Image 1 (cartoon, rainbow, N blue to C red):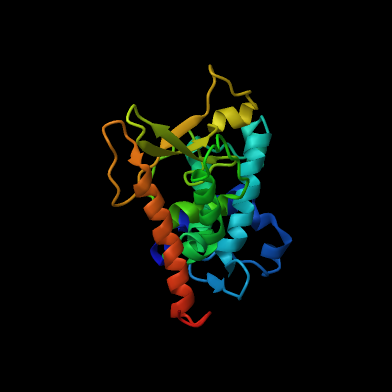
Image 2 (cartoon, rainbow, N blue to C red):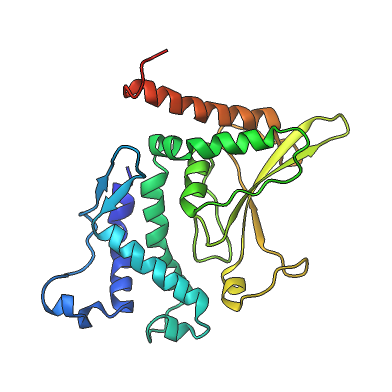
Length: 257
């Protein structure tokens, strides 16, 4: 899984190397580094630890992440690109490296179910607590990615962002609604600031709101208002939580009940 996607990063890697002028580095000149490879990714899986990785994708992700943050923080885009005049699309190509890194590590089906398990239980508990008006849970991009993957979220498009999976500071928002018959519904949005809002450090308000992309989930049907029945969403949570328990039994982590 993801082998084809990693193989397609060759152009992204070339752009990354050119942007950081890697051929001017001492490691390149001394033969210690000869470029990012698309076939040297290795996974590190240890008990009681998050999945890890070795190889070019891990290193390139660190560089990609640093460059994207620099692009957000530096008002001069040429200076942010170390003197290179990169297009908006090229910044997206650089960001794509770290997007794929997160996918590879945290969104494979069994991995997502495992990594997201504690947070899935917490989110569902908060959503089903009587009288709860608002809950804020703070995490990382890996949390957003694994939760969405474990719940079977469909692919989505994020306009006005160079990060196409989990933009920096994004929020996964579960919102409950009730109709006149007291029936409960839920919609799920990914809320994030646009690249221009981040680079301009713009204050968000009603006249300058963030982007909210409504998400869909495989096998679930929305009503005419674009909402899911709450029981369908809760069932999806329960299914994912149950798959975690099944994995524990399958791999002998605990005796079968």
